[in-house]
Length: 192
Length: 126
Image (cartoon, rainbow over all chains, first blue to last red; front, side, top):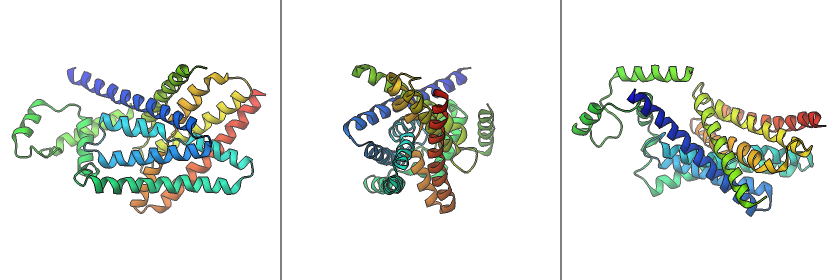
């Protein structure tokens, strides 16, 4: 029961973080919208800044899928960057027969945003060369497993702290049995 | 409309949109080796924006709801940053065909859904 409550609390925290980030992202986007008179330019600026921030946050993170990462990446960046107004602007350009501007706008959004992803990753690895371990697949798997099984049992944490692998963030003493359990839990969760 | 009401409606709409997007991304993105959730969320947001634009133009929805629904909810429901990041991941994994398919599917069907919703709700509103 206790474990169940903790799981629920963690889920609520996640959605609260996402909502908070979304509210801040929407407000910042509205601010940029009111500052920049041109609608097309405002969309491009929002998309570029949002993509850059998302990629930087993903490269910088130490622990994947945490509440703070949800707040920044899914909440703020997703709310800040925008696709709906982009398609609205594109249809408006097509209706006004401005084909050149339409092509330039579409290409600029896609190419510049993909470039911003690479730029942010390169800058992050330059400035913080010791971060970015979260991109490692093993850490991602360990985190998924940790979230699927809920909070770790106390003796597990103790043994990890007292053991030799105290500095390692990923649980190294995991056997196959908890992994299978985690997979089963995840499957059930998805079916719900 | 005062600035306070504007800010509150944008924030409330943004929070609701972000939570909806997080839900769909979590449910749909892991199903197959393709970001279905992002595509779905962007399509739904484009359709809603088109419907809202024509309903507002024909006077069915008051324009005071514009910050809540359009700037807040629909715009936050759609995302470009996840899209760009997924395209970059596809390019890194040398899945160029999938990336091209993803870009064109999102771009073309987003515009089509927007125009279709505008047309459809124009008919209904008139």
